[in-house]
Image (cartoon, rainbow, N blue to C red; front, side):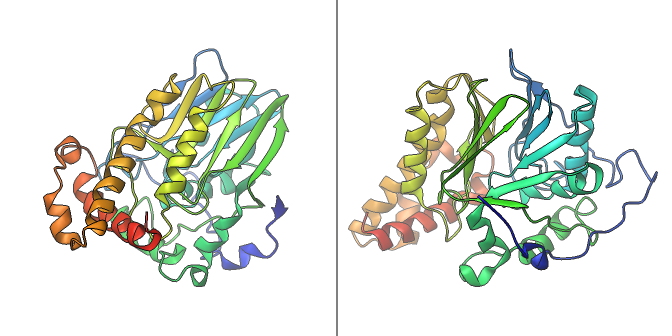
Length: 333
């Protein structure tokens, strides 16, 4: 854990001034509801994003996020995919408690989890944003020349999610970075952060609140939609190891909130879809590489029926398979 000295120098633009009183939500009215559920028997709340890819119909609300209320402030996990969504989350927090937001933990710096930070930076006081240290790569594309960088993604979202992401939207850098793990206390509760990546992204991390038996897994777990693997930083072997770590936790969590899809009181059930999908794609692409089968031929030969009707299949599956094909070639599986 360390302060991110000088990191703000790479933020993409200066913070704009929100138009006071322009609307109930200063970042624009949302066309969809942002609802929160409460974890039974715990001061933990979470929202489940819509299945599929971010677009104008779901206003970018495709990921999960949540917060924990303590006796001395609120700890937030992930901030959703637009400033308007982040503001809706902040309003929900204020409806639940008069405790201030103290900490925001970001599972990884992908657009659907971080653009809501702008609302917390502008409308909540003294918030400390945490992220894993490989987050620096997102701001510094020279660190991984094959990958996407923050500026390109923001430009894409300004087109795909206008008006909720526009020329006034900017990226908030973390205040604190951590390495393999970190821990802090807030209001008598322990918050354990563990780096699970590289998996879906280089900095993939989860947050455990042991006194409550609750885990926020981030995008280590997808439920109800095809995961996103189409990135040079994906490491499906390490991703599967992270899922094994979750299922081996002792004591087992009593409640798991994934990065996408419904929460679960059963850890094995929570990880089953993601684990099954990763294993299936790896097995199919490893066989193709072993047999020197060209990717296009290999992809067309796979029976994708069990996944073909799922949200994000058309948008992601072929790219996922190709990325894993390359991973199998590089690793020798």
